[in-house]
Length: 311
Image 1: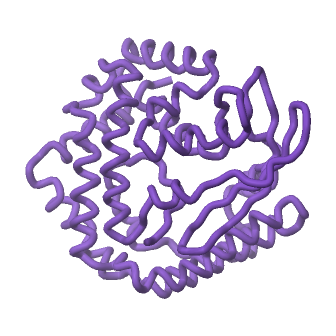
Image 2 (image 1 turned 180 degrees about the horizontal axis):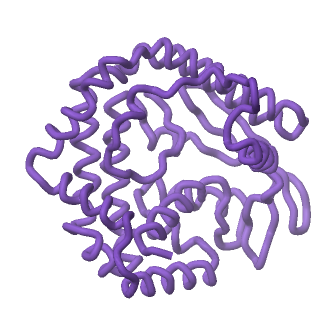
């Protein structure tokens, strides 16, 4: 595996750790909230260290082995991104790329598109009792997004410039000029620097009133019940100013509490079905979604985003 690809896979794994990455045994609440605390503190390395030891060792070995592999197209793209963010006029260049498409954004229409897409996803999830909680959250978020988007400033050039300033700073946080310099770093060093990048990413979201730290602070584990190596619980969190809940199934594996993968089976099953249909609606079907104008712009890669909470 190429080391650059591994980096982004690792960052993605860190992002989803909030859903129940294994943590030291103790109370299930403490175990599941440990990665939340790490994200709150921008400690990406701590998220990685919470992974099983064998997975850490495998990732580190693949990262090291990647240094001896020839550059790929992915390296070339990363080099272009790093060259851009390290030049004095990086934000100006990105603004030139983005402003024409920005003028085409209609927040209200975007909200309608999100609601239509959420409606289709919700219908698929609601086909089973286990999927109903996910359907309710997704459809509720889409409805609230329709109210939030027109006031978010998502089509405001001044806010875009401010947000891009933080994203450029996130790219600079790695302190490297090209992919070769990034590969030369240890994986621990890269993940440590990713914490600084995450901090800038949070600041970029805050431009639009999205407070990721407030969202993380709202997360709680409640109603833990059960005995032995299995528990049930409720995940509580606040998004778009409204409290949300999701039932969880927990299990104790090798002395560590983690989320039972069956908790998210409705989502994985729906994704598998979509993949079997080519990742989109079937013949003669229209998902109601259109390609957004911002999809025409390629902006430097950033860590995977979590759900945010506009203040």
